[in-house]
Picture 1 (cartoon, rainbow, N blue to C red):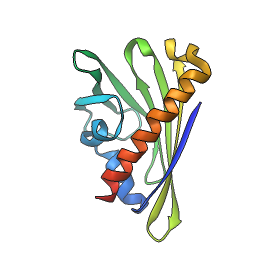
Picture 2: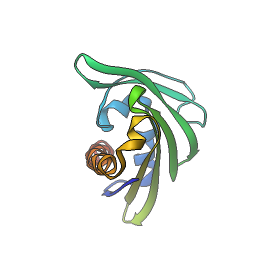
Picture 3: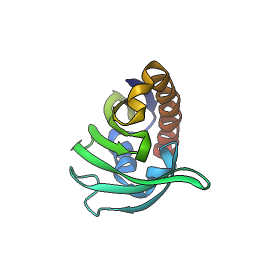
Picture 4: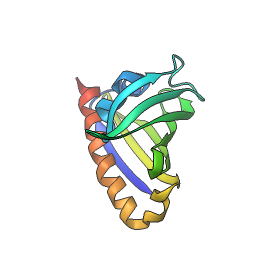
Length: 142
C-alpha cells in the first residue's frame, strides 16, 4: 500500500471543491492525460469519471468510480487502468487549524498486474502520489 500526506493552505471545503470538480482530475492526478467525460452526479457514490491515462500515443481509456464520499472529509475511489489493473484510492481531509488541511492519500492495487508488483509497485505509487498531492495543493491554494 502507498500512503502519502500533504498539508494544504486552504480549508477542507476548498480542497473538496477541487476533488469534486471532474474537470480538474487530469490536472492533479499524475498519469491522467485527460478527462473524456464524467457523470453529472460526480462525486456521488456510483458515479464515474472517464479518463485517458498515459503519454502521447501510449494511452489507455478507462474510468474511475466513486465508492464512497463524505464531503468534505473523505473520498474513496476505484481507479481502473486497463491492463495495469484497478486501484483502491482513499483521500482523507482533516482540518489542522488556521484554514489549513491535511490530506492523506492511500492507494492499493486490487486487481491486475500491479498487484504482483509488491514493494516496488508501492514505492512507485508513493512517488506518483506525492506528485499528485503537490498538484492538488497548487490547485487548492490558487
